[in-house]
Length: 268
Image 1: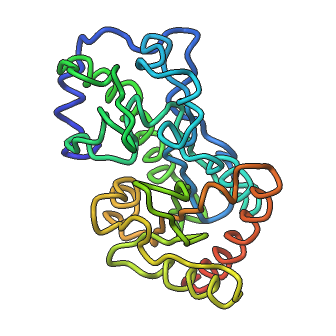
Image 2 (image 1 turned 90 degrees about the vertical axis):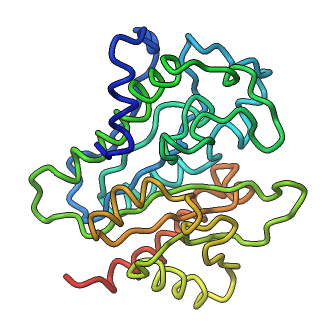
């Protein structure tokens, strides 16, 4: 558990249960015994909300939009997990309940507004309510990742990859990139990954676009990759490209080929 997470965990002691017996778990582990040397995660895999939170005051169709989850990302991650025989950890709840890719001290951890849409159920939360979400959704997700990384394993992991997607238009601006790499100081995966995409000649590649891992958009890769000196990468794919099964299959193959090249560039 990170130092920043500990206060929230302590504050949640005695908080009322948020998740009921009919609610899904806060994480799903796919292919836990896979022998591949990469660990994949998907921070925004689900648009589910705990029953106790209702719809957070949103119309039901809003929960199908990008504000609630990373459209198509979980489906791509599933394919990559199978291709590389790699374990995959997927979050169980919407980023609107609590964002698993944010430090708990970040004001966007439980957003009151997302892409101009007010989130009524996130306004005026008291400390106990916020801490319950952290303790029962966000912290178990990261604990699940840590169990895999810290468990005895032969061969050990040599790469950590977080799979995301981004909306093609944000704040009225179109985003031309099809696939992007978010990275900070460690380019061991990002640089060969981007080079492989550029070499194709048919992919518009974003280097820390449309977000930058240098501006607090990569909490998960920082916590589990960077702090461990484990080669890491946050992959972003534009959502309109992976909004249907055919697109998912195509872009999972494109991203998978580039990841294969990046993995091959690492020392054995």
